[in-house]
Length: 240
Image 1: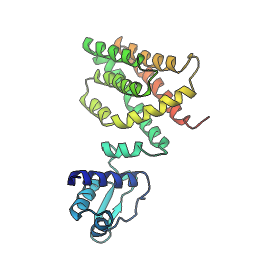
Image 2: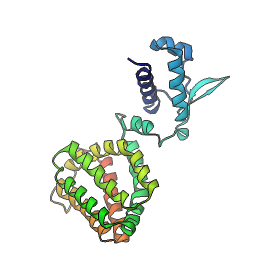
Image 3: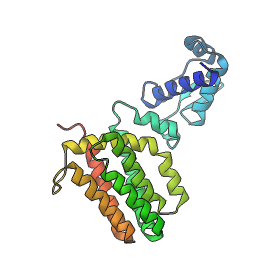
Image 4: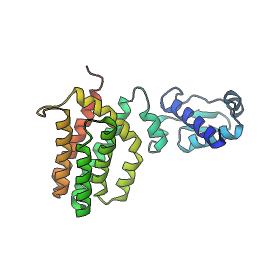
């Protein structure tokens, strides 16, 4: 195994332990030489891993105290690795709820902007992505990918590079969230929809039509309704 692979493996191992709560804020990490011996790797590898975790603000090293886990409020949550580690927790309901709260703060406004800026080329792309979504509702893996692509096509129509980049940063976490909601909606379809497939498609179609018809207020409302439903599904995932 290459030095880089060893470093990456140790980085993900330590990162997960911190984000998953196995290493608590304020807890001290072993010294470099001790950790090197424990893991059978060079001190250079350990220092590189600690440097990477420090860059993500998960840990902090001082001369007097040593290396300690930082408070959660200090963490660089927008880092893709931190988001991925958080979305991999066995009990990730709280994280997915927080993620949906972020989406509720961003995506309805993004839909209003998309309705304002959408082009004919965007409309064609959005409609194509919706057709792919329709064809995927009976296959979890295909649906997760198609749903991301559909939402991404809507965000792209905003023509705001910051919004587009933010959603791309969240991709892996959003995919894990979609796995959760896919299962939950099978158990808890909402009235007046005939079933989970109908609900999925009708809610997404409502957003698509509002954006493509350039109705900003309606686009904002329909995306808010969709994400509110996502939040309900995440909270219902443990109900029988």
